[in-house]
Image 1: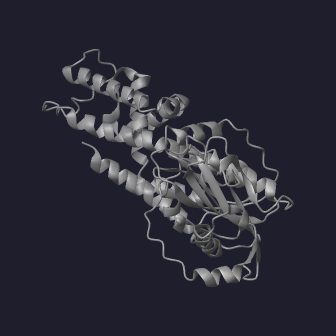
Image 2: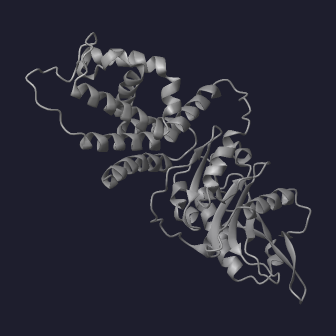
Length: 411
């Protein structure tokens, strides 16, 4: 637990208004007065949050924010997105960040209590300049009382996982981050971090190096995809400690696994649909009519259908985004094919076409990517990385639900 006597320094970032005219002077840190060593860092954080794209169709929203500063102290704040400024056009995109700088050992429950207190404090304040005073944690806990239980849905699977321990989620509504706060209920240690909506230029990796980080980005105009793509271009510093290489390798494997999950799933579903559309072969007294000996030059009607079917499957794998995976593993896939036909002779292709062999082997790879196996890989990769058991379980459950849901929706 946190020290209940902990001293909390208040701050407020928002629109600076001129006297009685209320003319807008722009957004800046309004409290406390310059002098605290953390003021510049807190103001930079607020400006980066304000740069996040926010739809004009979304209402103004209050969201929880808590990150670690460079010196180890913790920021707990209320981020108010989607505010209109006091210019003649009343432009959207304004942001207020109202919060406190707390001791480093602040636990999750105390941070959420402070968040509710900040909401009450902002509702009763007319001037943000007055919010730079100091407070005592014990007084805040007594004023807020017990926190309500979280009853919100399980979150979506992250759109990006970084080597340094950050998870990025895409928010489909402005309130999504606050609706998933129960992810923090079992946060281990005191180095956890939670960021509300961020944009393309937010330095996520800088914060992730200070402790496990959960971050959110608006799922608007491909923002999440662009942020994901940009992150892959950022250089990653080689870890200094021996032993972290294996952890980075696990994260890399997990990124590839989740990245291929959707493409492979749709390939499998489309394969089932094509199989069901192919008419059954004509009956024959010869059990091996479907398999033509490799030395035979005769091409039967069934042979032609089989060749067309394998060609269609190969094209399907390419269309669904698997070309890079299959091209990079040609030699292994061919070796896998040779092993397959030893025990499954009916899978043998005519005339030794490498393309057909690779197609058969690729289908066998997809067949092994079951829900249980992928769940197990997700669980192994996320374990012992600072993420809570609840977050790991939520990711595994989402993998299972996505498989089951997509299969049910398939025509």
